[in-house]
Length: 505
Image (tube, rainbow, N blue to C red; front, side, top):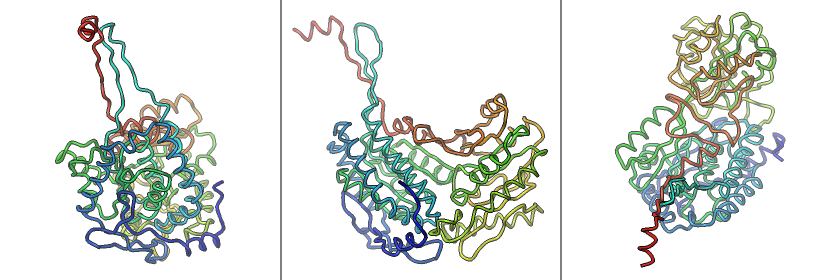
């Protein structure tokens, strides 16, 4: 169903794409009030793709007013659960029908390999929307046992107007992680896509309207963080912000909440994730394959990337040899060529940030095990750096690029200490042949998601989010994500004989 096309077919699709360029508010595309635009480019080629509406606070005010109006009059939240489900399933079907277009648009706007867009991002986006749609009419509210004289009901109410602020590394998938549970709950949403990657979000908004989501319920306001993100965070009629992105930006949204209406904030932020390989790991070929995938999938532009390999000293050399063998399969180049697994970094400025970590290899006298080369433009080949210590910037800072650091340990307690030696706590991987060690280390590592003998992020039914500076306020995915977008209301009804007698009289 999601089979990749050929490079020729992808390029033909890219040549014929029509790009949405305006904000989508109240069921229609509209330019920014100021008339200003910003340029979005193909990072792989530097080619300008489109001029996108550069919105500001006035556009935010208009979008919030329309979203609030849609919520208050109940045009979406008061539909039966079955009706909302039907419309979201129709959206998923439309995404399926347009999957090739969406995959190509995602690739040329972000630099992501088109094969991954086609086989991972787009199908997972569709699955996420379907999963939350199917959940709508299967969640039940509660009654509490409070004795014979009262009835206590605990019910969910949609929280209201939700601002969904997205990152640039997984534009479609992060959009689905936010809007699917928010819309399923009955909220109105205003999406602020990353300035670097706006095209697929606008296209999904258009398809959502075609599917039957009412005007004002799904809005997209395009522009910079300062001009759009900050006004959304400070807006008194925005009831919640759901954010994925950097930890410094996440902190700002907490300040915005405190400075406005104490809106609910759910943050999914950065990570500096360890892959811990114990001495008793049974299949080093499997370990190497999974470590390579965890470190270099999506060019390492991934908050859950396994950017720290923490390996027992006795097996390090053998594991690195096998990692090198798997790296031969990870070709770097044109994202529209499905043979390439490493595409372009998202922008020149991000490329320079990531490249600066390569300078540390020389200045810190580290060992370059593999890679380290850059190509013209914004391409960096998969790189493995050996001999990294906890004092190194490579060990401490989120690189968000295709660089894996290698650190050794000699005892189980040292491995856990190294894994936890970070301000982040998003994910971790543990590789071992011992069930006891798998459970013990998984419990001791402070992170929101631990995988054992594999790299992954679970599926739509499992919560995703982190400890410490990786997350705040809730989780993406699963039924727990649905709860993010609801308020709990207690309804207490007096059914005592006295109350009944008075009602009869």
